[in-house]
Image (cartoon, rainbow, N blue to C red; front, side, top):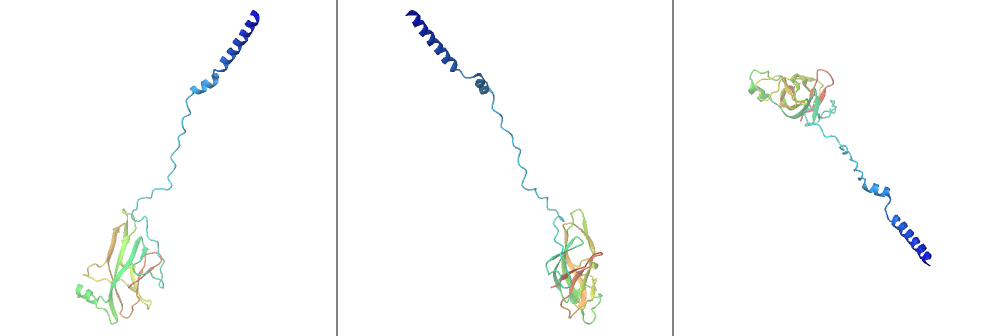
Amino acid sequence: MKNKFLQVAAILLFILSISACGSNPPAATAASANQPENPPVSQASPPPAYAEPSPNVPGSNPAPVVVTTKDNPAPVGSAVLVDNMNIVVIGKVRPADSLVAKGNMFTDTPAAGQEYMFVTISASCEQATDKQCNFDTYNFKALGTDGVVKDFKQVTAIDGLLKYTTFNGGSTLTGILSFLVAQNDTKILLVYQPSSGDSSYLAIP
């Protein structure tokens, strides 16, 4: 009887020892728990969706070149780009005979059937500010319906009369061009003839 009791006690002790061993966590699991978490992966900032615009300097955004002809001149008030200048016809004075005579009584008197015409224009230099445009009044002509081209007519003592000059990019000249034209011609065009290249035509009001 005593031997049977000892056998049962031994079996119970064996079972208890097995249970105790199963309750301990595996060594690998404990080691992994002590490892630090993986650091987050840094992400580079995305590139900008567009480039920043460059500063707006004179000459960086010139007006489109207007192709003009005798039959399709630039309308009054519109710009024509010639020799790096935007030329715009603003208005006219016609006849201007009394103004010419008042400025200088010795100025040539118009021949019969002719009269003085003043054309007011603006010229904006589309170069960069460190460059210059050359403005020459003798590049301007008046074209009559008879096909005759009239040169710029120099007069004196007239306020605002334009003359040859150079001016910096970003600047604008405004003044008068003078011509002798036929009195009965009401559809005269202003023509710009560069030293090279095609002429440009602008309507006069």
